Length: 192
Image (cartoon, one colour):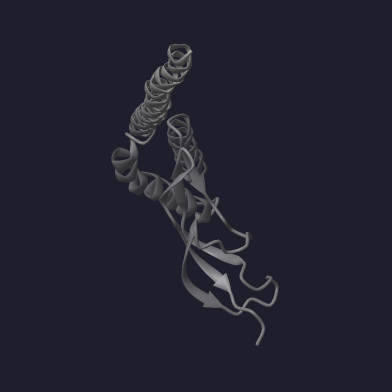
């Protein structure tokens, strides 16, 4: 019986010994599982960072492309700016000639023909400029706007509202909506 009793004891010792490695290996498995989960989480974080960097890179490339397209569009749209600026004195001269011809009396020889000729030349020139996107700014009677007008002086004008353009010294021009030259104007003073 002693043998039988020892066997169960031996069996229990060997069972305990068998449990210890199992417990040890069980702790090792949960430790390895935690390590794998931590590594997986780190890899997921790294993938998220790469995905974010790729999205940012793609967005930056799209912004650069849009900016380049806008620059090319503006270059085409405003390529005439320097040339147009050089044409403005011609328009001013024709305008002054038309004003001078209008002031000629009817009794002056050829006055009517001069008025018509200069007027038609001015209209033709302004139409040509307009087809190129250059528009004349004639602000007579409008409220003064420092964006499009340059005030040369202020005068008392009882028949005009304060801050109104009463006289245009030189007309302004825009090129496709962008100011090419501000109109030089005289502005009505406010009542003191």
